[in-house]
Amino acid sequence: MHRYLRPRIIKPVRRALAQLAPKPCYFPQTVVSTLPSGFRVATENTDFPTATIGVWIDAGSRYENDLNNGTAHFLEHMAFKGTPSRTRNSLELEVENMGAHLNAYTSREQTVYYAKCFSEHLEDSVNILADILLNSKLDKRDIEAERGVILREMEEVEQNLQEVVFDHLHTGTFQGNPLSMTILGPVKNINTINQADLKNYINTHYRSGRMLLAAAGGVNHDEVVRLAEKYFGGLQHGDASAEFVPAVYTPCEINMPIDGMDFCYGALVTEGVSWTHEDNLTLMVANTLMGEYDRTRGFGVNAPSRLALKVGRQRGVQSFQAFNTCYKETGLVGIYFVVEGNSAVQFIDAVTEEWKWLAENVDAATVERAKRSLLTNLLLMLDGSTPICEDIGRQILCYGRRIPVPELEYRINAISVNRIRDVCRRIFVEGRVSTTVVGDTAMWPTNEQIQAKLR
Image (tube, rainbow, N blue to C red):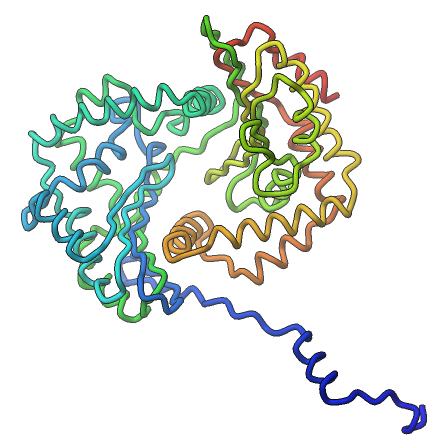
């Protein structure tokens, strides 16, 4: 083209185009160090005035047995009862004076103790975490008092039918394996767990190779490493990995009718995949496509899914939520629901039709929208130092590393419509279904009948 015929871009337009040009995104780096003992330290500095720092332990209820099931959760309760250098009252006062927040939780695979504090109190928080983890008095009087607290917590859990459904679902699908046991444990164990049981669990599982100090917010990695060496340098070495017992998925059919109930609470699942399985992200996209619905509040955070629009026109469906629960070697993927008993068959028809649609007819445009929604939801969950810290701790224990956001985005974008169809066919259509239902279950179909709808 002649130089006088080339389009000329005047300066204001050039500036506007420059502003529209894609700019590199900055994602703080997760820095990981491993001490000689095997104890890991992972941090992400976001320059906040506050920080969250916590200890993630690769131990939960699945590392227990029939005799000590409930010990990990019991220990969580005992951690805040005092140490030789801090009484319960002085611990609470110290945390309050710092303007900090101290908390803990137990799951089937992990136990977590963490503190949210001002960055200037980071060392004080690590000091407290190390003290309550490694030096709890485990006083016999406190143990006796805490039994009642845990039993009351169990009563509350038994009133939460979603918890009831998932506990029985795990009991059925992973029968004979510690993964089938509840986090709180049975009443018999809660009444008999003693100081020796608690100390034995600490000595067995609270080891350097199974623990991680994670921090996010206004933190300096080298400083956190120094604190880890100072306060966790005396941990027992090793990881006791030989105690892990792989679980095997076994289809279950649990029907628990309760007279006088208007609704059927339940879960319909097939075997999912582990945290590290190559199909995990694909199932997360499928999970987004199935969506959620609650008659009292609408369709949830995303645009309504096909299933949500369909059941929204059915009078008997109160709510549903698709889920993808992963463990180290297996998983459960499916849908939790609350429906009127006489609407159960109609609801199952809708779910199985969606599973077959995902396996056979889902289109590329719909998959692309689901991928964008999934990535957006994952990033929105990382709002603040505490969810970032939790993400760091969980990912390093589950994956052995923190997956950078650009890599996560790349892997999600690489999922094709054919891959969605292939994975959903293998998992949902060809998979073996399991069901657990509680309440008005008279009209609930058998597993064999449900399986026939998928053929």
